[in-house]
Length: 163
Image (tube, rainbow, N blue to C red):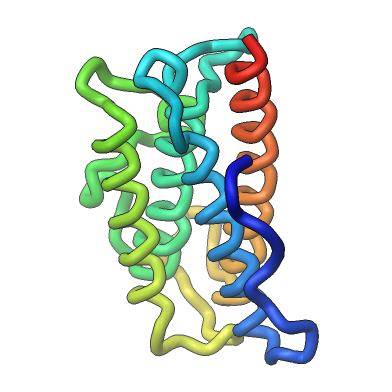
């Protein structure tokens, strides 16, 4: 998967530093799965679902906006202009490109960092429609999602490059 190696975290760092380091590692990792792919390759469907390398990046952009901007920030999906369901978030528009989806992804990551900057891990956030949770829980959920989808993207990339 390119030049990316290892974790940015040191095992004795504090909990927040470790969580943020692992989230950043997977943020970089999933973006790198598009490195060097053509527009056609990034849109290529290799599985029965609508999952594509570019669609995965679009989905994790949506996912981070849901957890950080909606859940933590308290702005509704409607106000954010987000699709309502995870399935819809994978769908690519005709004008989606590697550059445009990557730019939106980077913006969502930057916004996510800003939204939680002044909050403790124990801070309770109430913007999610299913109820309150802590910032720690949000970090763990985002880490889980990023790791899950980074693995998918890595496998799709391997299949595309092997073809």
